[in-house]
Length: 249
Image 1 (spheres, one colour):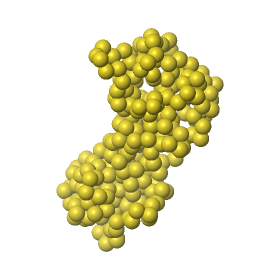
Image 2: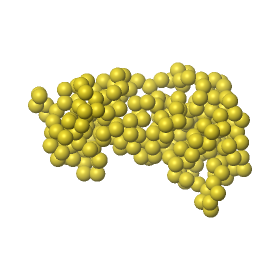
Image 3: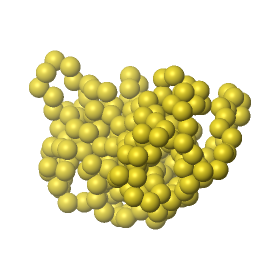
């Protein structure tokens, strides 16, 4: 194997044109994705053996390193499981390029990468056509996001828009019914009309949906929770909401 330099980036040496992906499920999904252009693959000997067992041949020449090298590069808190790749970002569609059927999830300034990664995972599980966020006030495609998504970043188109209210109006023009999740409203999510393409809008924890976003929705709905707590972590709320609309469609 070629002895390529393995280095740790400093805090100012960012390369936004490169995705940093680590962890077993995220790396395997990226390597399986033919649309991914892998630039480099670093892993431990044990991880290489496991990867070859599950994938067979690899699309890029791997570099075997000591686990401490991955710790040094990613930091002590990254659960890399012995695998790390650098890859070019995936090309993402515009709103007018996504299928005009099924479900779309829209995030109104949800910025925590753990939450957005978990939401992507739920979107993949429920066959969501795209995840839509604003270009500002949304997390970058970081290693934390990829790890939390557990491979879903390769499966769900991630569309970033400049103006969320205009994006909602555009989806409406494609016959999407846009519903916003709000724990204070009277309407239960199970009671929404069935059959039309659906866009589900979720707001940031604490603040919820912004006023303009609320006004842009066709309807506000709540999760019908039986217990005394009526609001959930946004990623948990997304999973339950997707389950509810999948059951009712």
